[in-house]
Structure formats: C-alpha cells, structure tokens
Image (tube, rainbow, N blue to C red; front, top):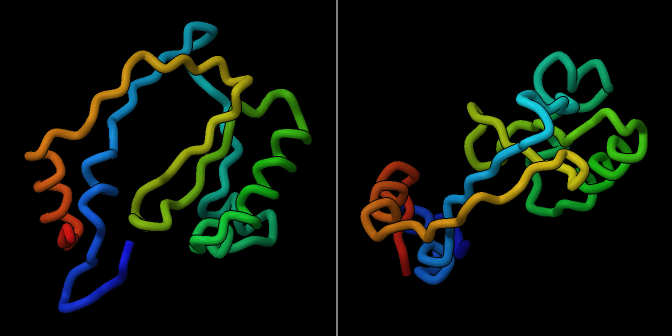
Length: 123
C-alpha cells in the first residue's frame, strides 16, 4: 500500500488483481479450537490490540509460536483484524488439518466493489 492520499488509500493495481478467495475444508472434525486474542480474553492475558495493529508481525508471530508450542489442542488463533477492527482474522496452524479446496482469483467486479467499500484507489 502506498498510503492515504487525496482522501483514499492508494494501492498498486498488481496487489489487488493478484488476490484470491481461498476455500478450506477440515475433514477431521467440524469445529476447530482457536486461541482467542480478542476482547476480554485478550485483556486476561495482559495484552491489548497492539498485538494485531502493526504492519510489523514480529510480536504477533511470537505469540502464535508461543500458543502453538504451549499445547497441541490449539488449531490456530483468532485476533482483531488490523484493517477492519470490527472483524476478526485467523491464523491457522498446519496441525489443524485444514485442506485447501480451491483458490479463485478475484474478478474485476469484486476488486471494484472492494475498492469502493474500503475507499481504495488502484494506481
């Protein structure tokens, strides 16, 4: 991302057109167990949203490694999305058993809709 200029975020077109929607399936079980790094669960750990608010992933990756190593029961983590603070993002561990079903490049109309929704100008 280039930055916020002239009232919108400028993003190189290649970064937008190379994005895909990926679908996964888990054949081992219906429900995955995720370590919750949001809301009161996050505060109980003595943390705040700084863990997921930075473009520098050193801290968040260290927490993911610590959770992964702490117990085999965790399939991944859930955290507040850095780009959409009312939504969640997920980091899944390989041991979760998720299997990629398919990946589909975003269609031009999908890219346009997302740019309109998030105030992005392709450059």
